[in-house]
Length: 310
Image 1 (cartoon, rainbow, N blue to C red):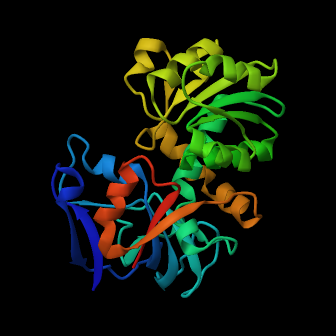
Image 2: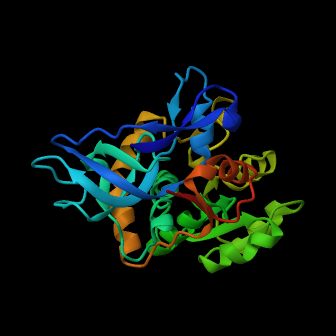
């Protein structure tokens, strides 16, 4: 029997339960993954508590592991595969588990450049960053502003932007400015005078877009002041301002975002395989300690990605 985490009610992490489950044998077009690491994202907590959720809700959207079984005449998202091959999978349901049967097209050969905890955290943050970059319309030589650039989405964005030759001025707290610099951004600190510091950092170049990964009033206000075209002010947090301010919001639950993120998975795996995309992992937890890990995750200060290890 496998074991998996479920949200059993709307009360958040306190209502999570670790249960025995049966991972069904894969049929044609499916594989069973023996999970070596489950990636953790705030969406795991937020989406399980969303209005209208039908409990119990299986938790977790991305994993890394090895193929334990494969259905007949089945290929994975990256091509032919065999039992024992290492894979990474994203946009799965119930990734906080020891074993999982999924549609095979959701799995891709794991980049050998990444450990399982790193690979398990590659695709959700990476696909979000890729969509922000695409929607920004930024081209080689352009300058963009990214709020919360030291976070998981920000770090992936910095690396993907660097590949395209796009300059990023990234905001962060004082203790995280070096993280922004490490991944190629021009780091500036939050707080009074942010707009002036952003303009100084841009060295006279206009900001063609502003990307918001934190949702503070300061982030939104500075974006509105620095970027004239509101269709190029894009948030992953502030849905309440889409109509009021005319800015754009993206999210994995939106159909257009889901289609884009499905389509970009192979590109992200390729970037990682070529050593162009790193995934900083702050800490790993035993799978049984998912509640403690989630508490740290939602504190807003995990210091990097977290992973659960069966």
